[in-house]
Amino acid sequence: MARTQAQAMLEAWEDGRAARSGERGLILLRLAEPTLEEDACRAFSVGRRDAALLTLHERLIGPAAHALVNCPTCAEPLEFDVPLAAIRVTASEQPPERFELSFEGAPLAFRLPTAGDLAAPEAASADQLMRLCLLEGATPSAPAAIEALEAAIGEAVTTHDPQAVVALALDCPACAAHWRSPFDIVEFLWRWFDGFARGLLEEVHIIASAYGWSEDQILALSPQRRQRYLELIGG
View 1 (cartoon, rainbow, N blue to C red):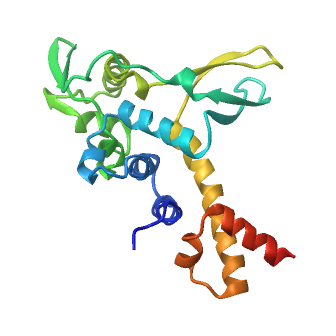
View 2: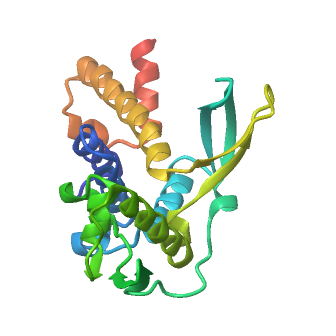
């Protein structure tokens, strides 16, 4: 029997509970692109992955992401909605397979980071990710030079894969501070996902306790039918 969407979502939540952000991004991408093979999902550039996750957010949750942040200056909490259409980036061309940089007089060639790279245990830091994406040349060893090279790579990624680098311009109404904050669609999706999965498991528990049905039988029901059974159980 084919998995229902509810079963697939619970399995994804279970797989991602103890995972790093990059691993969660790949798990969510599999939900967003269920017809693609694993290798194809891993090959997505980060921007292409995030574009697919924006679409998944629109399909599951809606056209806006709810954000809650604290002002870095006065700690005032800010709550607002981010229209996803406003942060979608239309790429003008296919991202290049490689880009070249001249750093400290030496040529270096890199490829764009992928969804698979961010999920890889050997790319747990920015420095490791940079080395994983190196195609030609040798990266520096001095900390200051590594930091400068990472900044240069970040500018190149912004140019070639702009959806991967989205930041929100924020203003604090309390102290008038202005700052830019990275928008991480994986974080937004996963926060909702965690609450959804916990709520769904609670529904399964209540219905199973009342009727003795298995988890698979309950998840095979439509959300509307599950809700009606919950109403009947509650009297």
